[in-house]
Image (cartoon, rainbow, N blue to C red):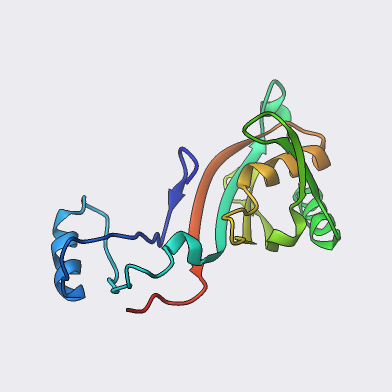
Length: 180
């Protein structure tokens, strides 16, 4: 998760030094969890099986954006403008992202195939902010559409500096349920 992001429905891999019954593992692990954290299930997976990160196929995100920078207090972008920008992105055949790799070499990739769904809603009590919900595919190398890339897209389309008010990963989708 990016720093400061919240998450629901997270998955984790654990490897034990000896075999343990899943129900017992759930009970013992839950006893060690901080208040407010609940483990929902434990499933045994063969040590030779793919890790959970290799099984990820999609993620669902929710983020709130609002105008930022010097004119933030006086800037209210109409919800219709946000929704038009979202429709433009959903209707586009490609969306090239330009950045650099760890060695500083320029690279580009098409982010549009990752975006599956995108919705924009106003937030009651926060007239300048909107909530974006989107689902993005995750490829076999773990690449996906990052929330800050959508923030950048909307910033360019709306010609406004935008700040992220909150970020939550709502869910992760696995290729298949892990089996022993």
